[in-house]
Image (tube, rainbow, N blue to C red):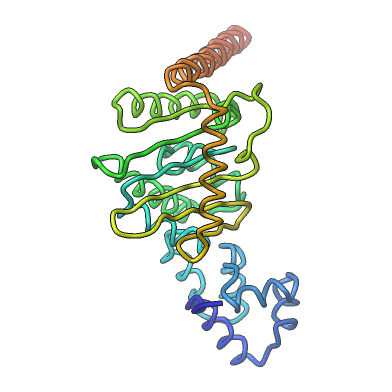
Length: 284
């Protein structure tokens, strides 16, 4: 299973020190005992709220909350995130969310809030800042960056119309600067091999290729130990690329959808202005 996370050993030591079984602790936290077992095995991390409850129940003085603050990435993504820096090429298919490397601050914030409704403001700001730091690779010549998005990515109004308009403008700017290559798979195309999961492929100058796939609060890194799986991920990505629009047509679609969002924002602003005028007249 590999080396356990430091918080896992700490949790077991604290629980044992308090004379509690996993079931005892789970009962105090109002969670299933299997979740405590996952925490102690390092397979899962406590949520921020769970970490606060652990600190309170075990009287740690904030130990588990600090563990969360000191970890910039989810455990399942940490290895893939670190691999982005030395990579010479990164290619990613995104079925639902804008890829993390391309996200604006407001979009990233909306994604975090959607994934977990309870976020202390300070921790939320830290998570957004950590995500934006990953985009430092955009300022370098390498890695080469290629992205394929399902049309759903640009149609789902994550954070609202204004956030989406700014997000698409950011992506369009990166395309026009020729820093990234991006294509969109239209919803009308139907099925393709990659549509069920996010797929990321990385190449390196002096190391085997790496593949990363991600699901709900989980992810898997595949490398030289499982070359067949890496090739399957490559095949799925190529399937999505075959289904995608040409880059020029993809850019035009992005621009069209961006203008739709901007039009929606203008309509809302006009409606709000009209309502404000009516309210002023009513009070007058």
